[in-house]
Length: 400
Image (cartoon, rainbow, N blue to C red; front, side, top):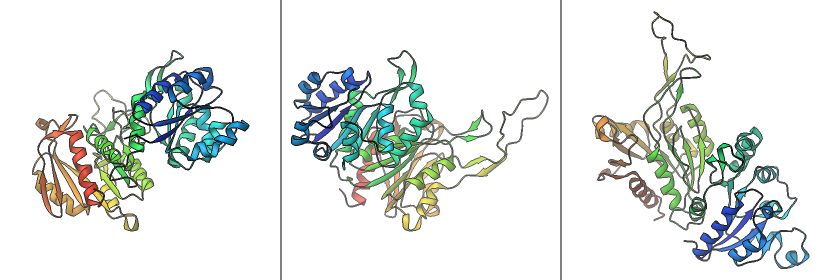
């Protein structure tokens, strides 16, 4: 997949820079040409000699090196690559990227590139969670910058939390997705996944049993075929799929806002199990249990219908809108009614009754309902369901 491809790898300052050496080796093993920019901070953790030995190319460090500018200036460095990867991407580098600063070779190349950019953040948990970093990240993702990680765990500083750079294998997978020449290359796709949480008070909420496994698998399958995917996920305990943009939300209203912000797109797959109702009388303080008193009344009001909203989006309506029908009885009858009522193009119907093992499980039995009829698939793993659905989407869009 990467044979003959060219990656410009920017290694900035942080202990995670040692992982970049393994990333270079893995890229080279797959036939990818790797040029590296090593920042001053990065050179404190890995040596130019080690980077050059693994990449098989000169290591670039200075913006105003007369030799480099004559032979391989920052413009050529940034333009001759198929993909620019910053790993590790420190909080400082993210801030410079967001502000458009260009005070060293790394930031200059990032500002001058016209190629896709992938960042692998790595920093202390407090730095990762700081409002400034979150704002910078939001700015970069709004510009189309892709992100992989960070993960959570024990950090080099001894603290535990989010901020660990993604592992080289994860970054490699994201690179392979971004450089894919699959049938959906150039297609923008939006996938919703997981449950929504509708707050009762600051402590409690109502939700459903969706794990997000099927929606996440669909997002990954579309990305593997080359699509530019935005995954909008409710609260789940799943890692982000590699090579795509992830937007995390809590409520149905927030999910709808995120879907609207992600449009226009050619295909939208609404796989999330969105709560049908939200709490109208949400309390701003924790509802207290009083001895002898009845439970407090919870008033429910309908949530916005995301699938119907997308299906009726007018000029912004995607070419293909796919919904899901999670049913416990009369599966196909209810799914057909939903297909008509929502105005979408396809419905993927699945049985989520207690003995089905669908919610939280790794397998699914689905029926694809279209204007042409019903296509019933045998029980298979959710990743296989996702791959088959992605192939059908590619064929429908004339990309197969």
